[in-house]
Amino acid sequence: MQIVLRTFTIWVLTALINAVISACCLAFSDTEFNVWIPAFLLTLFFTLLFSVPAVFIFFIFFAATSKSDAGHLFRVLLVAAFVTAIISAVGFYFAFYYQFKTFTIFLTLSIVISAISSIMLHHKFIVAAYKSNMPP
Image 1 (cartoon, rainbow, N blue to C red):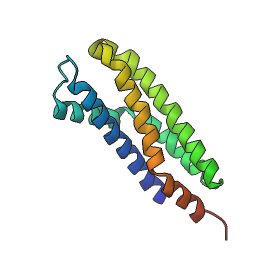
Image 2 (cartoon, rainbow, N blue to C red; image 1 turned 180 degrees about the horizontal axis):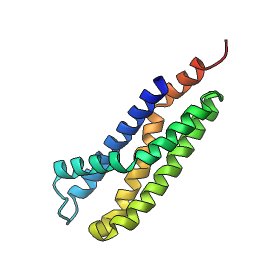
Image 3 (tube, one colour; image 1 turned 90 degrees about the vertical axis):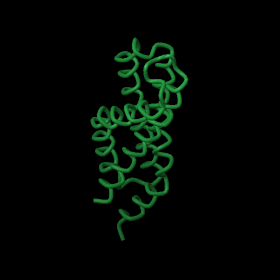
Image 4 (tube, helix red, strand yellow; image 1 turned 180 degrees about the vertical axis):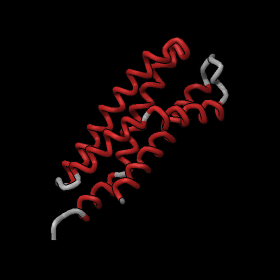
C-alpha cells in the first residue's frame, strides 16, 4: 500500500512541477494560453490525464525492483521516469506543435525536467522503501 501511495504522490508532484514550469513558459508566449492560471490548470489537467500509462509503467518498475539494493532501485526508477517522460515529450511535441510553435521545445523539456525532479525529490523514500523490504 505504501508503494501505491508513494507512486501516486510522485505522479501528482510531477504534474504540479510540469504545470508550474509550463505555465511560466506559456505566460511569455503569444498564444491564447498566455494567462498563467488557466495555463497552469490546463497543463495540470492534461499532465494528469495523459501520464496515466507512464504512471502504470513506473509503478510496475517500482514494485518489481523494490527488492533490489537502494542504489539500483533508485537508478531503475530514474531511468523508467526518464524513458517514459521522453516518450511523453515526443508525443506531446508532435501532437501540439502547431498550437505552441516555438514554445513546444520548452514545454517538452518541462515534461522531462518534472519527471526527473520528482524522482530526485523522492530519493529518501526510495531508500526507505528498500530498507523496509530487506529480509530480517
